[in-house]
Image (cartoon, rainbow, N blue to C red; front, side, top):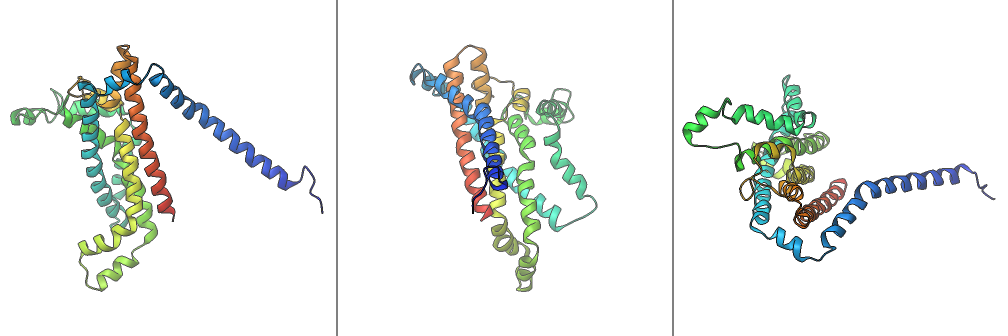
Length: 275
């Protein structure tokens, strides 16, 4: 039995390969080619110039501030995300739609608008400014403002990855644990958390990626002061504006490497979650 050249099987195979080539070509042009060009421009004159920029006092401070922001914002959003997910799935009420809408707010609002909103709260004429001034607390143009801004823009990720997992596992295990005499904390720690761990971990990775690369809202509330309130993305932008291309490209490569590490972790966790 022979199969004609124009048989449905051959046509389907050709269509699949065409779509794959089109998709990979699109990604290559938009993602891979700029990255290759970035690495080329960074190291075309050697390693010394970008390395000197990254290891300078301002470069190291920008990296340190970025990592500090990640270390504060991500754990707080993880705890909030798990608690909020349990509230939305296990304790349903009429007001849950309002919580759900508030969590999605950072997806709908521009980061610049979020930064301006923080000015209305913590600026000189803000709602909280009198009390904070009396206590000697400075929020805007300091590390707390950067952390608050990054928490706000990255708050949905853990919730959005954990809620579907909680809905899928159901309540049978938790009910069985309660029947055996386990209290609420034991039920969560030994039953619920292990069941949702890959969803939580995937959300943590996404949250980390967002905090690492956040630029818009941080540029509004930080003041972009070198050596004080300048994160790594702001360091890249300022060096590029000052025509320090080796410094800008070197810091951009460092950010790209951090992003690739996060991407690898995300793919690994996604495979484990699917398994």
